[in-house]
Image 1 (cartoon, rainbow, N blue to C red):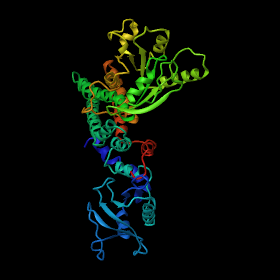
Image 2: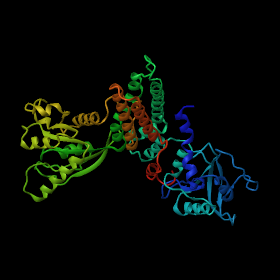
Image 3: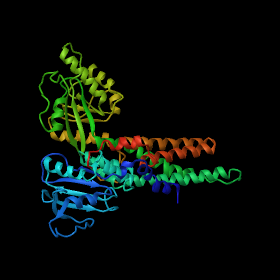
Length: 481
């Protein structure tokens, strides 16, 4: 058995042995608060089956001893465990006996009528049966510690719950299936194989003519896959969390009209007079499944109006914090000092030059475009025409999505900051190892860097991870999941 396999079969146990609360039976309301057709209470732990036998009476064969079978739905009623004639609610009971459950423990779900009073009463009855309220994310944490999920899959659970767009859902679903886990484990296996070769080189270094190293293997099966995952992180973050886009430009170039067209509603006031927008306006919408936070800003120009000056100051702040800038320029006029000053202020930012008002010119050629502008991504539009806005939407997608990725892509996407950091560190360690090897450095250093890469992949998967990191991961979960 490889070192990796040994680690995978043992690392979950360290937390179970360390934390006595892991043996508690936990319970929580798993559905959001409020009135609805169904409210679900979830119980997990060694006493889950005993508890429901004390408080549940099946409608069928209610006078016989109730024997629970796994993965069957029972119809009956929840009763007061002391005064069993008092019915609390009619429910459906779904038992899942270990290890065939989400937590790999005995799990029981009670499907009751929703509403605060009903669910709270059932919850209190269960708490009287020596269960305790689950901590946020504790059901998923137990699934991780019991080896049902690795940490990338556990993090995908909360991402799936929080997904607001189809793209975010697909990434989370892909990771929950274990595709990122499988990719990282494959890289880890190749790291271990390479370590064996490096150790052989060290041990038999006196044997002349023997070379156990395959650097081409390092590049093709370790370094490049890590770099590809690293590159995917930007796209993953955009697809998961969305992107902040700021409209920038001098007054009266059409920023507010563009915002209204993108939103398909009259959100910003549009007039022929410069300086209409004095403060920034923010709205959210989707472009091809990507969440966009669009910010219409005050036109940037020299002004003595104190209100407009404050708006321009806020504009500059919003522009610096944005992920993408749409610099809007009136194509029917020659660029002036204000246009050049705006471009200079966003030179280092990711941007698209939006040449607006093409309906006012005879052709779509920008006659006097500065040389520096020609290198930038650009689109020529008319905010008055819907088809022009389709071109702008398409350009935004091309700007923020990694080349080669599309909605049906089979590419594995990293969308978690913690995972991204581990992958970057592993990639750097392999890079250091290859640099040392190329310069005929000590093979012990090469081995050390490979060991560091292995540790980083372990961390990404949740192997030998610190309690602090584990707590940070699960504190963002809701109670009941």
